[in-house]
Amino acid sequence: MKEHTHPLLNHPIDVSREFSNLENTLFLPKQLLNFNLKTMMGQIDWNRYAYKIRTAFNQEGLSLVEQSSWEFPPIYDPYSELNSFKITFYGNRTVRIQLHGRSYPHASTSSLMLVNHLKPSPPWPVKHTKNRIIYQSSAGSLIIHQKPWRLEIRDASHQVLTQTINLEDHRSLRNTDPLPFCFIRPTPNYARKFAATFQLHNCEKIYGCGESFTRLDKRGQKLVLFTYDCHGVQHDGMYKPIPFFMSNRGYGMFLHTTSPSTFDFGYSYGEATTLFTEDEILDLFIFLGSPKEILSAYTHCTGRSPMPPF
Image 1 (tube, rainbow, N blue to C red):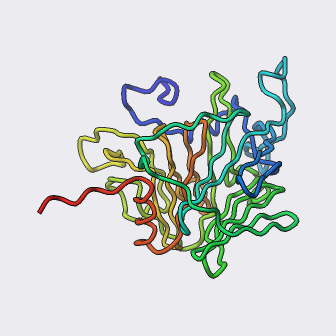
Image 2: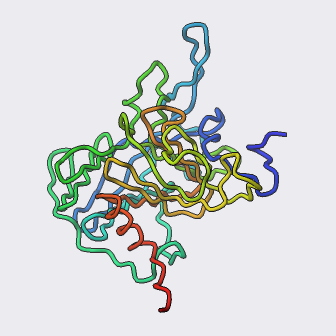
Image 3: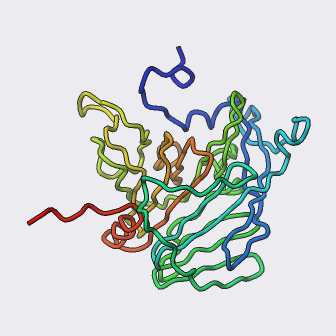
């Protein structure tokens, strides 16, 4: 019995496994179109890719090759999808990135993971150059490269903290090392699942993701964020997973989803963090600052425990 196709009841689901399935179709971001600086909304043009086996140095490997559509009629899945992209700011330290895996936006609904009174702040001051959109605050900046689409996060001193990894950033003969930022369309059900891949610097340390009994520094680990009764502390099962982490470089991330998720912190590739989720919407909060400032910004969005009575 294959665990990834027929898991036992309440066994953790490792979302990352589906991203190496040769039957699935991958969509990689090509360019940002129709972006409105005031509404901070636009569309991402995604191109379709599939795995192809390549023989090199007496072994077989997988590479991503651009494909054309085989669906008919095209309404099933057009070749080049234009899906919505939106950014929102909450103060000078928090930016929210939302990407949709389908060509129509989902309705905005309330969430138990966010405070009810969470309201966006005015957008950060913006500057638009030929191929870049730069939002700058006193805590740092978000740079959107339009073609090829890329996100870049910098601190107040303009140092790059992290950035998305594109297909062109591969470091070996296999262009899947590391896996580029993408979403997949699994063949069995035509759902959408995201893999948000970001640069992981040398000597960078990662902390968070809830209660676990592995090393405090999560770098080099793959965490399956799935509530599981571990019956002990001698393995990597998690009883209280939380899709939030922070880096010693001065940023943190919160993946707003209740879907099964897997966080790969340099486990599959030493210079990449990949956030896998079964959600059809990638809803990612990014926080800038010191650990104290990051935690304060995070709890501003998700809520804080009330003070106990005296």
